[in-house]
Image (cartoon, rainbow, N blue to C red):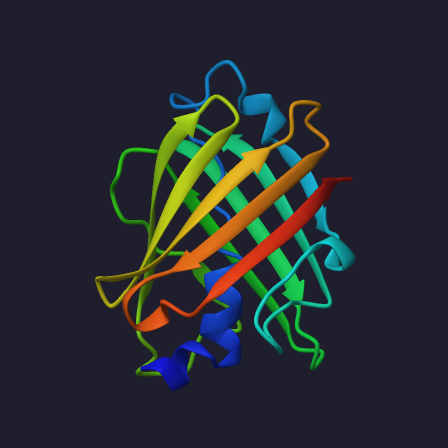
Length: 167
């Protein structure tokens, strides 16, 4: 499984599973998470080969919670797009990824909870097994979004810090 976690699709999904706050959970500060964010690779760090050369995250409100769209390009030039609609209710949600992962690829799910007015935590699971948490924080001025990934279990050696700036 460690080998698979290092592969492109799962590695990028793991690092870019940037779930942004649900309307109810982030009532006062949700506007800090809403909008378009561009990755600043020079301020980011990730395992070798896993840091995208570029990435854009767009977050908006939906009637059922929040909607997040992520488009990134790997260092090898492969473009990946994922979308997810979710709430911060502790339930698992599955992103839709294009191109679709190959048949038989383990299923990734995400759940979300609020940590503070300017932070939330995403829990990632691979086939139902927890593999990482991501602490997502927006700066006080609302101009920087940082996602810090900490692996667990078979992904315990995975850590990353992705820094996004408001577009």
